[in-house]
Length: 355
Image (cartoon, rainbow, N blue to C red; front, top):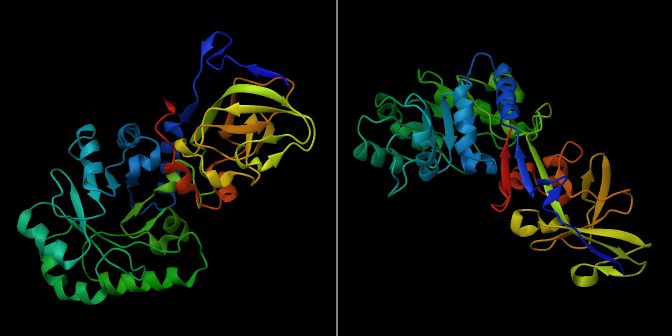
């Protein structure tokens, strides 16, 4: 049996790495395209979870340079990480609100309950805040009765905006969308405060959902439901070794795959420790050498993936897992998940290159 180690660190004399290539210009273009769909609204940017795993320290300043002034993070420490990178006229909103012990210096908490509201006003009098209402998702935000009890006091304190979040915006015909829109209007009409209901999916539902500010998130990073998004991520994995495998021989853990014919197998240098989901095993995922698809065979392991490269005339030093032929949502479909998880699972061992 032939075992052929490859010098995966060199190709044509140039150093290469298993690499995550992130197209900042595509992110900016996707934001502009989504903003254009809601021309009457201010277009914020959701950069939580380290800009969906792609690097908030690079993404947020680029969006600011393109004109964005409103940013959303999940936690206060995420906001503090990017606060020094943005001028003071950038507003960084913290979706978890005023949690006990949170340092909200220079940040705007989005308050989710009467308890958060009263704590925030006691601790941060005169400092900016926003309000989140629950319109039926039952996750974060004040319910109608809670809001009714403090509405006058909260409005008198001058919130920067009032928001809610749609549960089913990626399903345009779902009745929950209209129900939540109706509830939001009932809770906020007459407030004379800027309002926000729509993230990426809500923007695509149309102007009734846009209000004063929209909050594009996954669509910035090339994900559905924004089908017109430009691709943002290319993930290339280095080939460590190739070998000839005879018909009937096994490949990988558990002997879950046996060669149906004599074939050539390449092993690449990433696995579930790098966010390549183990659930991709045996599901039809592929890696690509330019336009040629190479099936993943055997199980995805912690650091390695095995690929059938029999159809290639020559095995390149790298194969692409995320690319134009297999974007994040296609990979998510194979793994039985969503593009959000694919993006935010990408590990720290990749060398990241920003375009």
